[in-house]
Image (cartoon, rainbow, N blue to C red; front, side, top):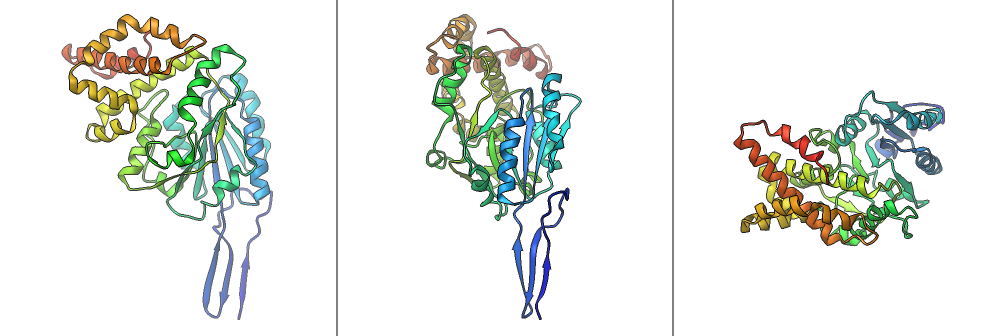
Length: 360
Protein backbone atom coordinates (compact mmCIF):
# COMPACT_ATOMS: atom_id res chain seq x y z
CA UNK A 1 0.00 0.00 0.00
CA UNK A 2 1.30 3.42 -0.91
CA UNK A 3 0.36 6.46 1.15
CA UNK A 4 1.04 9.99 0.00
CA UNK A 5 1.17 12.97 2.28
CA UNK A 6 1.71 16.04 0.16
CA UNK A 7 1.99 19.61 1.36
CA UNK A 8 1.89 22.51 -1.03
CA UNK A 9 3.72 25.75 -0.60
CA UNK A 10 0.99 28.32 -1.24
CA UNK A 11 1.56 32.04 -1.52
CA UNK A 12 -0.56 33.75 1.08
CA UNK A 13 0.15 31.22 3.84
CA UNK A 14 2.34 32.97 6.35
CA UNK A 15 4.85 31.35 8.71
CA UNK A 16 5.03 27.79 7.40
CA UNK A 17 5.96 25.41 10.22
CA UNK A 18 6.37 22.09 8.43
CA UNK A 19 9.78 20.75 7.49
CA UNK A 20 8.74 18.02 5.07
CA UNK A 21 7.26 18.31 1.64
CA UNK A 22 6.65 14.66 0.87
CA UNK A 23 6.41 11.42 2.84
CA UNK A 24 6.15 8.13 1.05
CA UNK A 25 5.41 4.86 2.83
CA UNK A 26 6.38 2.22 0.29
CA UNK A 27 6.80 -1.44 1.30
CA UNK A 28 7.09 -0.39 4.94
CA UNK A 29 10.00 1.94 4.11
CA UNK A 30 9.72 5.63 4.90
CA UNK A 31 11.32 7.94 2.36
CA UNK A 32 11.67 11.58 3.40
CA UNK A 33 12.30 14.52 1.11
CA UNK A 34 13.50 17.55 3.01
CA UNK A 35 12.06 20.89 2.04
CA UNK A 36 14.67 23.64 1.66
CA UNK A 37 13.68 26.65 3.76
CA UNK A 38 15.62 29.80 4.44
CA UNK A 39 15.44 32.96 6.56
CA UNK A 40 17.05 36.15 5.24
CA UNK A 41 18.26 38.43 8.06
CA UNK A 42 19.01 42.09 7.34
CA UNK A 43 19.95 44.45 10.18
CA UNK A 44 19.20 47.98 9.01
CA UNK A 45 20.81 51.23 10.04
CA UNK A 46 20.35 54.43 8.02
CA UNK A 47 20.10 52.81 4.60
CA UNK A 48 17.38 52.34 1.99
CA UNK A 49 17.08 48.55 1.59
CA UNK A 50 14.13 48.44 -0.82
CA UNK A 51 16.22 47.58 -3.88
CA UNK A 52 18.14 44.89 -1.97
CA UNK A 53 14.99 43.26 -0.60
CA UNK A 54 13.24 43.40 -3.97
CA UNK A 55 16.18 41.65 -5.66
CA UNK A 56 16.24 38.94 -3.00
CA UNK A 57 12.46 38.54 -3.13
CA UNK A 58 12.45 37.91 -6.88
CA UNK A 59 15.17 35.27 -6.63
CA UNK A 60 13.51 33.51 -3.70
CA UNK A 61 10.20 33.38 -5.55
CA UNK A 62 11.92 32.04 -8.67
CA UNK A 63 13.53 29.24 -6.63
CA UNK A 64 10.11 28.27 -5.23
CA UNK A 65 11.23 27.71 -1.65
CA UNK A 66 9.55 28.71 1.61
CA UNK A 67 11.30 31.82 2.88
CA UNK A 68 11.07 34.84 5.10
CA UNK A 69 12.95 38.13 4.94
CA UNK A 70 13.49 39.73 8.32
CA UNK A 71 14.29 43.45 8.15
CA UNK A 72 15.00 44.87 11.61
CA UNK A 73 15.72 48.57 11.86
CA UNK A 74 18.22 49.39 14.59
CA UNK A 75 17.39 52.99 15.43
CA UNK A 76 17.68 54.62 12.00
CA UNK A 77 16.72 58.19 11.24
CA UNK A 78 13.04 58.77 10.53
CA UNK A 79 13.67 59.39 6.81
CA UNK A 80 15.00 55.84 6.33
CA UNK A 81 12.24 54.29 8.41
CA UNK A 82 9.57 56.00 6.32
CA UNK A 83 10.82 54.47 3.05
CA UNK A 84 11.76 51.03 4.37
CA UNK A 85 8.50 50.34 6.19
CA UNK A 86 6.77 49.98 2.80
CA UNK A 87 8.48 46.56 2.57
CA UNK A 88 6.05 45.18 5.14
CA UNK A 89 3.41 44.99 2.40
CA UNK A 90 5.32 42.19 0.67
CA UNK A 91 4.28 38.65 1.66
CA UNK A 92 6.87 36.88 3.85
CA UNK A 93 8.76 40.14 4.50
CA UNK A 94 8.72 41.14 8.16
CA UNK A 95 9.80 44.69 8.93
CA UNK A 96 10.38 45.68 12.54
CA UNK A 97 11.61 48.94 14.08
CA UNK A 98 13.52 48.90 17.35
CA UNK A 99 12.91 51.82 19.67
CA UNK A 100 16.63 52.44 20.18
CA UNK A 101 19.91 51.29 18.69
CA UNK A 102 21.18 48.09 20.32
CA UNK A 103 24.35 47.59 18.26
CA UNK A 104 25.68 45.36 15.49
CA UNK A 105 26.07 42.23 17.61
CA UNK A 106 22.82 42.48 19.56
CA UNK A 107 20.69 43.10 16.45
CA UNK A 108 22.14 39.98 14.81
CA UNK A 109 21.38 37.94 17.91
CA UNK A 110 17.79 39.21 17.83
CA UNK A 111 17.42 38.32 14.15
CA UNK A 112 18.78 34.83 14.81
CA UNK A 113 16.30 34.36 17.65
CA UNK A 114 13.32 35.48 15.56
CA UNK A 115 14.25 33.50 12.44
CA UNK A 116 11.99 30.49 11.99
CA UNK A 117 13.79 28.39 9.42
CA UNK A 118 16.79 26.03 9.80
CA UNK A 119 19.24 28.20 7.83
CA UNK A 120 19.77 31.94 8.11
CA UNK A 121 21.39 34.13 5.46
CA UNK A 122 22.81 37.29 7.06
CA UNK A 123 23.81 40.32 5.02
CA UNK A 124 24.68 43.96 5.58
CA UNK A 125 21.99 46.42 4.62
CA UNK A 126 24.30 48.50 2.40
CA UNK A 127 24.73 45.64 -0.07
CA UNK A 128 23.71 45.00 -3.65
CA UNK A 129 23.02 41.63 -5.30
CA UNK A 130 25.30 41.16 -8.31
CA UNK A 131 24.41 37.62 -9.44
CA UNK A 132 21.09 36.16 -10.58
CA UNK A 133 22.18 32.91 -8.92
CA UNK A 134 22.96 34.51 -5.57
CA UNK A 135 20.17 32.73 -3.67
CA UNK A 136 20.47 29.41 -5.50
CA UNK A 137 24.21 29.34 -4.77
CA UNK A 138 23.36 29.30 -1.06
CA UNK A 139 20.30 27.04 -1.25
CA UNK A 140 22.40 24.02 -2.20
CA UNK A 141 23.97 24.19 1.27
CA UNK A 142 20.60 24.34 3.06
CA UNK A 143 20.23 20.58 2.90
CA UNK A 144 23.16 20.21 5.32
CA UNK A 145 23.21 20.55 9.10
CA UNK A 146 25.62 22.74 11.06
CA UNK A 147 26.91 24.60 8.03
CA UNK A 148 28.60 27.99 7.71
CA UNK A 149 29.16 29.44 4.24
CA UNK A 150 30.70 32.83 3.39
CA UNK A 151 30.07 34.38 -0.01
CA UNK A 152 32.54 37.25 0.09
CA UNK A 153 32.43 40.90 -0.84
CA UNK A 154 33.06 42.94 -3.93
CA UNK A 155 33.12 46.60 -4.98
CA UNK A 156 32.40 48.58 -8.09
CA UNK A 157 35.47 48.35 -10.33
CA UNK A 158 35.22 52.09 -10.94
CA UNK A 159 36.34 54.49 -8.23
CA UNK A 160 33.49 56.56 -6.75
CA UNK A 161 32.80 59.95 -8.26
CA UNK A 162 32.64 61.42 -4.77
CA UNK A 163 36.26 61.92 -3.70
CA UNK A 164 35.18 61.76 -0.03
CA UNK A 165 34.36 58.06 -0.54
CA UNK A 166 37.61 57.17 -2.31
CA UNK A 167 39.57 55.95 0.73
CA UNK A 168 36.82 53.54 1.81
CA UNK A 169 36.54 52.18 -1.74
CA UNK A 170 40.32 51.90 -2.15
CA UNK A 171 40.71 50.02 1.13
CA UNK A 172 37.84 47.67 0.26
CA UNK A 173 39.21 46.83 -3.18
CA UNK A 174 42.75 46.25 -1.90
CA UNK A 175 42.05 44.49 1.39
CA UNK A 176 38.52 43.03 1.45
CA UNK A 177 37.98 41.56 -2.01
CA UNK A 178 39.39 38.01 -1.83
CA UNK A 179 38.75 34.98 -4.03
CA UNK A 180 37.19 31.93 -2.35
CA UNK A 181 40.33 29.91 -3.03
CA UNK A 182 42.39 32.40 -1.05
CA UNK A 183 39.85 32.61 1.78
CA UNK A 184 39.63 28.82 2.11
CA UNK A 185 43.34 28.68 2.91
CA UNK A 186 42.53 30.22 6.31
CA UNK A 187 38.73 29.87 6.53
CA UNK A 188 38.18 31.14 10.08
CA UNK A 189 40.53 34.07 9.58
CA UNK A 190 38.56 35.14 6.50
CA UNK A 191 35.11 35.02 8.14
CA UNK A 192 33.06 38.16 7.53
CA UNK A 193 29.52 38.91 8.67
CA UNK A 194 28.51 40.98 5.64
CA UNK A 195 27.32 37.95 3.64
CA UNK A 196 27.11 34.49 5.19
CA UNK A 197 24.78 31.52 5.59
CA UNK A 198 24.65 29.72 8.93
CA UNK A 199 22.54 26.98 10.49
CA UNK A 200 20.21 28.26 13.18
CA UNK A 201 21.30 25.33 15.34
CA UNK A 202 24.81 26.81 15.50
CA UNK A 203 23.54 30.22 16.59
CA UNK A 204 21.58 28.52 19.36
CA UNK A 205 24.98 27.53 20.79
CA UNK A 206 27.08 30.53 19.77
CA UNK A 207 25.92 34.14 19.84
CA UNK A 208 27.51 37.43 18.92
CA UNK A 209 29.08 39.21 21.90
CA UNK A 210 26.64 42.06 22.60
CA UNK A 211 29.23 43.73 24.84
CA UNK A 212 31.06 44.77 21.70
CA UNK A 213 29.80 48.22 20.80
CA UNK A 214 30.18 50.23 17.64
CA UNK A 215 31.91 48.94 14.55
CA UNK A 216 34.32 46.10 13.99
CA UNK A 217 35.60 42.63 14.88
CA UNK A 218 32.34 40.92 15.80
CA UNK A 219 33.29 38.69 12.87
CA UNK A 220 36.73 38.03 14.39
CA UNK A 221 35.14 36.78 17.58
CA UNK A 222 32.54 34.67 15.76
CA UNK A 223 35.29 33.09 13.68
CA UNK A 224 37.15 32.28 16.90
CA UNK A 225 34.09 30.67 18.52
CA UNK A 226 33.45 28.57 15.42
CA UNK A 227 37.06 27.40 15.40
CA UNK A 228 36.93 26.43 19.08
CA UNK A 229 33.96 24.18 18.31
CA UNK A 230 35.64 22.69 15.23
CA UNK A 231 32.94 24.07 12.94
CA UNK A 232 34.34 24.33 9.43
CA UNK A 233 33.68 27.48 7.40
CA UNK A 234 33.16 27.06 3.66
CA UNK A 235 34.03 29.97 1.39
CA UNK A 236 32.46 30.33 -2.05
CA UNK A 237 32.51 32.97 -4.76
CA UNK A 238 29.04 34.42 -4.17
CA UNK A 239 29.69 38.05 -3.24
CA UNK A 240 27.50 40.98 -2.45
CA UNK A 241 28.68 44.39 -3.59
CA UNK A 242 29.31 46.92 -0.84
CA UNK A 243 27.63 50.10 -2.05
CA UNK A 244 27.22 52.04 1.19
CA UNK A 245 30.58 53.78 1.15
CA UNK A 246 31.26 56.01 4.12
CA UNK A 247 33.16 59.24 3.82
CA UNK A 248 36.86 59.02 4.59
CA UNK A 249 36.40 60.73 7.95
CA UNK A 250 33.54 58.42 8.91
CA UNK A 251 35.63 55.41 7.95
CA UNK A 252 38.48 56.58 10.17
CA UNK A 253 36.07 56.95 13.10
CA UNK A 254 34.81 53.40 12.50
CA UNK A 255 38.35 52.13 12.18
CA UNK A 256 39.22 53.53 15.59
CA UNK A 257 36.09 51.89 17.00
CA UNK A 258 37.27 48.60 15.48
CA UNK A 259 40.68 48.99 17.14
CA UNK A 260 38.95 49.67 20.47
CA UNK A 261 36.94 46.46 20.02
CA UNK A 262 40.17 44.65 19.26
CA UNK A 263 41.58 45.89 22.55
CA UNK A 264 38.42 44.67 24.26
CA UNK A 265 38.88 41.21 22.73
CA UNK A 266 42.43 41.01 24.05
CA UNK A 267 41.36 41.93 27.57
CA UNK A 268 38.17 39.82 27.60
CA UNK A 269 39.50 36.70 25.90
CA UNK A 270 43.05 36.53 27.25
CA UNK A 271 43.28 32.75 26.93
CA UNK A 272 42.52 33.06 23.21
CA UNK A 273 44.87 35.99 22.61
CA UNK A 274 47.45 33.93 20.63
CA UNK A 275 44.75 32.70 18.22
CA UNK A 276 43.22 36.16 17.85
CA UNK A 277 46.66 37.66 17.23
CA UNK A 278 47.34 35.08 14.54
CA UNK A 279 44.06 35.94 12.77
CA UNK A 280 44.36 39.74 12.85
CA UNK A 281 47.37 41.25 11.11
CA UNK A 282 47.47 44.42 13.21
CA UNK A 283 47.45 42.36 16.39
CA UNK A 284 50.17 40.09 15.07
CA UNK A 285 52.43 43.10 14.54
CA UNK A 286 51.45 44.62 17.87
CA UNK A 287 52.28 41.39 19.73
CA UNK A 288 55.73 41.28 18.13
CA UNK A 289 56.38 44.89 19.06
CA UNK A 290 55.16 44.26 22.61
CA UNK A 291 57.63 41.39 22.92
CA UNK A 292 60.33 43.84 21.85
CA UNK A 293 59.14 46.41 24.40
CA UNK A 294 58.51 49.20 21.91
CA UNK A 295 54.75 49.71 22.22
CA UNK A 296 55.15 52.73 24.50
CA UNK A 297 57.13 54.70 21.90
CA UNK A 298 54.50 53.64 19.38
CA UNK A 299 51.75 55.18 21.51
CA UNK A 300 53.75 58.39 21.77
CA UNK A 301 54.20 58.33 18.00
CA UNK A 302 50.41 58.30 17.58
CA UNK A 303 50.04 61.35 19.82
CA UNK A 304 52.48 63.46 17.78
CA UNK A 305 51.94 62.14 14.25
CA UNK A 306 48.25 61.28 14.05
CA UNK A 307 47.38 64.48 12.19
CA UNK A 308 50.06 63.84 9.59
CA UNK A 309 48.84 60.26 9.11
CA UNK A 310 45.24 61.39 8.77
CA UNK A 311 46.33 64.02 6.25
CA UNK A 312 47.65 61.25 4.01
CA UNK A 313 44.59 59.03 4.47
CA UNK A 314 42.22 61.83 3.56
CA UNK A 315 44.23 62.74 0.47
CA UNK A 316 43.67 61.57 -3.10
CA UNK A 317 46.49 59.02 -2.72
CA UNK A 318 46.05 57.27 0.63
CA UNK A 319 48.79 54.85 1.67
CA UNK A 320 47.54 51.63 3.27
CA UNK A 321 50.86 51.07 5.03
CA UNK A 322 50.30 54.39 6.79
CA UNK A 323 46.76 53.25 7.62
CA UNK A 324 48.20 50.12 9.23
CA UNK A 325 50.61 52.28 11.23
CA UNK A 326 47.72 54.57 12.21
CA UNK A 327 45.74 51.65 13.66
CA UNK A 328 48.78 50.03 15.23
CA UNK A 329 49.87 53.20 17.03
CA UNK A 330 46.28 53.92 18.08
CA UNK A 331 46.09 50.47 19.68
CA UNK A 332 49.29 51.26 21.57
CA UNK A 333 47.81 54.56 22.79
CA UNK A 334 44.68 52.77 24.03
CA UNK A 335 46.84 50.34 25.98
CA UNK A 336 48.74 53.21 27.57
CA UNK A 337 45.52 54.98 28.54
CA UNK A 338 44.27 51.72 30.05
CA UNK A 339 47.42 51.46 32.15
CA UNK A 340 46.83 54.98 33.44
CA UNK A 341 43.32 53.92 34.45
CA UNK A 342 44.67 51.03 36.50
CA UNK A 343 47.23 53.29 38.20
CA UNK A 344 44.56 55.79 39.27
CA UNK A 345 42.03 53.08 40.28
CA UNK A 346 39.46 54.17 37.74
CA UNK A 347 37.13 51.53 36.35
CA UNK A 348 38.62 50.52 32.94
CA UNK A 349 35.34 50.68 31.02
CA UNK A 350 35.08 54.40 31.64
CA UNK A 351 38.15 55.16 29.57
CA UNK A 352 37.17 53.02 26.58
CA UNK A 353 34.32 55.27 25.49
CA UNK A 354 36.53 58.34 25.83
CA UNK A 355 39.21 56.77 23.67
CA UNK A 356 36.74 56.10 20.86
CA UNK A 357 35.60 59.71 20.87
CA UNK A 358 39.05 61.32 20.77
CA UNK A 359 39.95 63.54 17.82
CA UNK A 360 42.01 62.34 14.86
